[in-house]
Image (tube, rainbow, N blue to C red):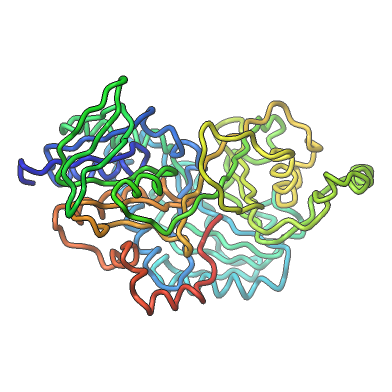
Length: 454
């Protein structure tokens, strides 16, 4: 890139770090500065389940292609670093006890295949050849998904799932990694190529017809950084950041919490995949607990139906992570994060125990659960915004909902190509902020369907 190009990235979360990495390491940008008021990769990027998948709903192939590219790039980093990022490929297992969902799983697998997620395989007999995913490593040749409807085969390979589990879909190009190590590897490589990290708060951006400078408050002083290009990658603060250049982004925030607890009884096997329960449920309470809750007007809601989608996975040698996003109200982001709602940890554990009954041994009581969380910043259809905005030289990389870690490597590449004029991939138009100006796209939003959130 020309020496006169000066790029300022506002935000050192995983999206900002990935953009800096792609610009400096892969495109040779010589003047890249990341501005971040706190520690890199600390506001929301370290609060995820750190999982990834190429298994995405429609209404087209764009998200699947985008994630396949991102996973390709994540695997490249894993190989280059001796798998410093602890990438595995255990997969996602979607499970149900509802026979009515079998056709849904078949359709989902076939549709995913047509969109580029890989071959759909079906196992409806005990003798069917099903290959389990390895506990470690990421070089398994299988992709696509295996749909198992023979219950004896399910019990053989997933004995820890609820005994009434009647079908599972095992998406194969999926698993998890260390988000912190992925971000650190990209940041270190970027800094070796001259990327600068400035601790400070962006308080203004000079931008009339085009971007000229970023104003930063640092160490009690205000300074200006000349900029020809600005990337807004401020995570939960993105809406306010964009307003500094007069851009109102169609995004909103949801607060989500993650529960981690010491699984001292190894209820979740250490070799298990990511598990997702597809059925709505009533939490498993004892008769005595039900009676007590029924008499408590403030807690009676805990007896109601909870939505599908509780999910979790083993974490290291002794812990288990659980997320149960049974709320989804739009909120204004605030930090420090407010206290989690009452019963958050117990709801998550009990909800997960419907899918993994061994967790019921804890009886809702487990030692010192750790609850953290962050914000899902989303568009209406749960697709990101990546690309230029109507101010010349300004770009956004945001609205990654709960999939920022898995999307980061493709998003950084895409922003870098927008800035450098490189060839754009076929999926690039699907993520442009300008897509909402297309009447056909706006009409499509009314029938969009599932946005793929877990």
